[in-house]
Length: 500
Image (cartoon, rainbow, N blue to C red; front, side, top):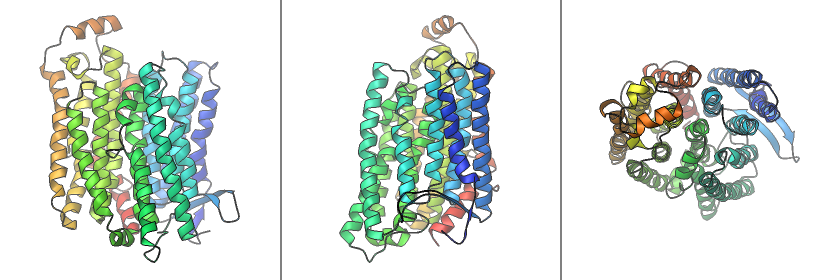
């Protein structure tokens, strides 16, 4: 046990409260609607409270941990929270709360709701478990649970398209998970330990084996992070999944791959070893290509959720690039971008879901004049789009500012072209949606679908509130970026530990 760490029951509680909530949701089929919504809301709010308490304590310099199960004399299921894990845990809890509130309206008429809500909350618990993992075995357990057992959410609609997307998803995830398992086993063999609180490997180990372990990790986590060419499951999974799950899938779950890459760079290998191996530049090449290539593909997508899915792939490229540059400011930008992207993309998928529900359209071309019928939804989409591009003073500007400073500080000025080019391409695939909503006259399809859906205005407040909350968070994370306990400040604490 780390002598400088404090044992806390709040850490395992933050993991197990949503897991218990998921179990309750699974048997809630006969419950009145209000009771189920009340219980699930209480679970989500409590999760936010617990993860926020952990964030505040860790930000004050306290390391929190809990030993759960002793599997062998040398191996524990061990939770230990650092600055990076505390931030990721609270991000997951807040976005899940918004998505759950949105689900109450969006999923009201859907089938098999107990199953949906059960796996929805279970996936939150597994994600917090990944964030709080204190060693590689614990990380692997929660990572695999969260990766494989979110399959029912991907295929929830049970259409042929959803089932095909689910098959592709599970194949990619199993292959990626197998590579991560192989890398973890080999790391344990080389290092004789697995605590991710400090670098595990060193330059005295065989170089060929270190390279093999590194690339197994990157390929395995690269599948979840959707780095090109390992991205194939993302464009199919997002359109097939329900919009609330698409929001957390894009905002948090895909980002878990980049979270894993951060752990590999800074906790398994360490900055100096990565530099000596010369592998960071190759990851940077892949990340830069991902930013541009995925953005170009997004421009050609007419299905709005598919366009947003390719946008997610491109944005995760920014995060991987910031990590691969091995610069403190670039790493700060990468961590902050994970946080900012979660709410920017969550807001965009919430908007896309309302267009599908209220207007019955998925095509960008069919959104002409939609702002006249859905002004609040259109405004939120516009704010989130501007933030994604990097418009000041919104959230996306802050993370891209740090990334730009890191690029200059690292001396690799060529990546500024990627940073600026990616932002311009984001404008090309996002701003035309806003233009169509505000400046185009409604086509014949729009009034017909409105009539068929029985409405001509905004969605109910229960569905609008999460959109507006996400938009306000996007503004807050930009305007108040330097405030305590917000991502930019927490990220600085994580980076200080990584580059110590």
